[in-house]
Amino acid sequence: MKKHKHGLAAGDIQPASPDWTIPQGWENYTDTEHATWKTLFERQCKLLPGRACDEFVAGMQDLPMGAEQIPDFDEVNEVLLKRTGWQIVAVPGLVPDDVFFNHLANRRFPSGNFIRRPDELDYLEEPDVFHDVFGHVPMLMNPAIADFIQAYGEGGLRAQQLGFLPQLARVYWYTIEFGLLKQRGELRLFGAGIASSFTESQFCLDSDSPNRIRFDLERVMRTLYRIDDFQETYFVIRDLDELLEFTQIDFAPLYERAQAAPELQPGQILPTDEVFHRGTGAYHRKAQAH
Image (cartoon, rainbow, N blue to C red; front, side, top):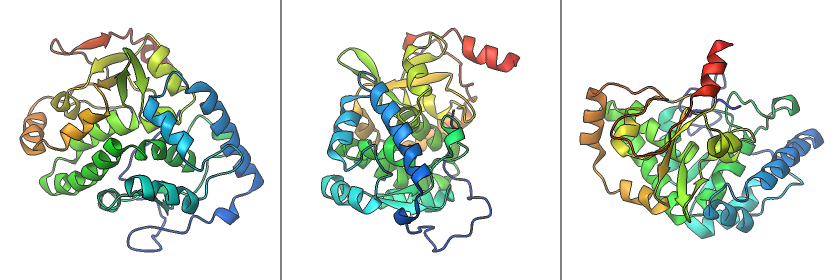
């Protein structure tokens, strides 16, 4: 399992520069670290066909990313910049919200330059190079996602000033990190938090436990999420172009209504929800019992 969120100061790490960027230090990766990447990469590549959306698979195929070694950001950026104008920048870990949003607003995706230990394959305190590069970068090759995440960065800077950051963060969480979409009549994953997780990429589509609900912007702004375990609810967008449609909406009145309304628990279902699958909740009940 992973624990992931943006926006916390990265512990006691002091930034080397005002934007927190550091060299990737590719030459410093050890054989063990490259081997960890290989293990993670190969098992996800076996698992994701038929689960990940077409756009994720296409992005993977077009990137200089393979099993044998951790990708070199410079090589990845050469392809990514030409495709959508995005680039990866290395950071030492989680960065403050304003730094994170400023990078996204300028089409720079902050990636941890470290990789998890071999004994932590399925649990992560903060996002590493596998989550950030394998999980996020294939989707950044897609123009709709590329534009949506830039707009999210711009919107994040505004939401900070207006005091609505929790509401906006939930939109990112339930789309870019843990989003599902419909493709040829079936549910597919596109969120990076799922795509980079061996266990959650199975749970989100196969388990009877979680809810799978049609995405509604204002409803999602009110919905709390899990950072310590699988999601209790996954929201399903129509297609990636729906994310682009969100960038044309004035979020301010939605924020105000969402903030004034009661917060919703992660597993809660409303009478107004369009439910694709009503979950049993069995997994989280069992987890709470322990």
